[in-house]
Length: 452
Image (cartoon, rainbow, N blue to C red; front, side, top):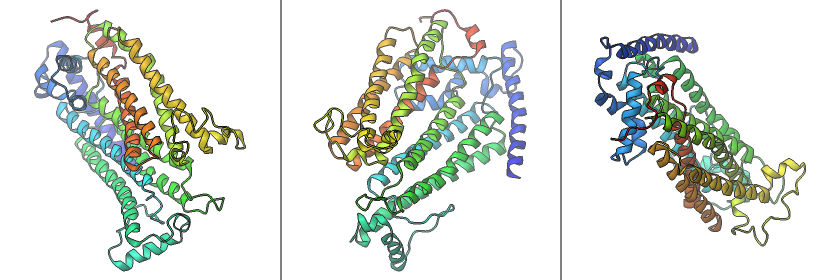
């Protein structure tokens, strides 16, 4: 029933969007504009078309950033046949953009909070789960009942035996906050989504994309409990510490990264339908950059996933030396497990070695990107992003080494996890900025950039 209503609303919005696009294209023919208050003039559009992108870059006072905004804006308001993701003009575009950027920021905070929860060993404190959630313990009797449940878990028996009720309350509140923050995100996403659908702002294409992201978000709760449940089972060995499955932890973190990147890309597409371009030369330069950014982005993603396996295997607590791993460059037991493939996902030595190699390769690749593009004729925004990306990559490697040498303190471990998502954010932003513009925009560009 709900699905049919959603499709019906999105189809109605699609018809409105076609009407909006047709009205916008009349600017080219000098006819009266139905949306003159929103589209009539570059100054009004400059205030709205790249609102979200400008909010990501604080130094908007720089002339080349203002130039980028005005150029992309001009293409939005003068481009015939542009397929907007949001109907009803720049005001609606701005509102939806703010909502999507806010949702992405919320997911970012969820990832950081999840890292703190894991590093404080709080994730196994709640031994049951309900999809709709439940109230926390409100009385001493309730706390004692929850504590008795936790005492039956392998983690209490093998790691936290003798823990006080006050210590238990700390780890319980950490896990409870993580779960409720996720549920609050679902409400924060669903209510504006319903409102924008009702107002007719969202097109069919955007509506389907957001519905998929919402479905992934709802599934995160199930994946999270599936992960926690693995840590409540008795370990195979009597000497092993209870911990969640590294495969399930990686699935949980990777899903969060996918949702975040999807929201960020969609938000950028809403506020910046066209990439910044002022000349054909800059478009060609962006195309050369794109050939490097796409494989590097995949490498950044793989490195982040390998970091999840490091966390899932507690591999950061082994070989706390750098650049060597103990006394060796390569440990002797990296292929000690059978079957062979298990070593790359369950062997502490192999998992940490893989992450070191991938992190170093990522830093070198981004360095090559910066070096190979330093003489290219590209938009200043692209050059600015490349410079920030290599700086973030260097900081992330430094955080990783510091975390390892310090035996994974909560502060550095959390910063390292946040750094991974920040680096991934920059790669998403860079890929979005160097994407190919529409054919109608290309036809309107001069061969080279006009100098003032």
